[in-house]
Length: 230
Image 1 (cartoon, rainbow, N blue to C red):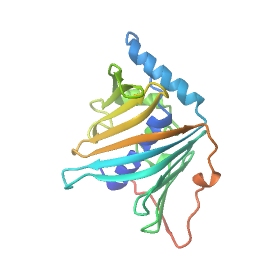
Image 2 (cartoon, rainbow, N blue to C red):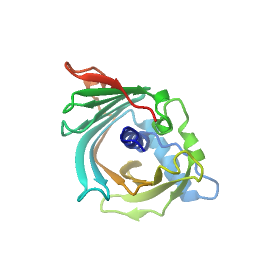
Image 3 (cartoon, helix red, strand yellow):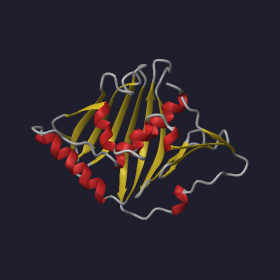
């Protein structure tokens, strides 16, 4: 998987499991039904969301994991932003089907639209129902575990054999808190052994967000390019 694909998939997963999880629960799995239904209800009631995010990257090619931090923003309908604490990390801004990746250290702006992203449009939910994910993933919900301040459910998404995700990732694991019915941790395990973990905290729901957060505007002196296709 190319580096450009990895970074876009990572951001798409953040978006997907923060606000857009709409898979169906099969008959006979009552706990799974409750979790999915509660997440869907919470998502429908959420008009905006702000949260602190910490990302941890682990790889056999690195002596130690790489930790980065960012602010995550969402506003209905279809606006997302990820603002890093360091200029060396990518900033992501999504307005409906338009995605910008801004790197202030390298002074670059990388742009694309959903139909140019090979399979990540399913993760973003642009132009396709997220229920399409059931075509590509088997979903398992484990029994609730009690944390210090809330109950927690573990959701495991495993790519189905023969799907377009099968040779790219081992699984995606999501931990959902039962008071907000939003994820507080997500883990992506790739086929090459690399792992990325996202941790969310300090949730602020349905509060006003400055419109400038979602503005797609090229800073002066920055180079603009299109995201590489596979």
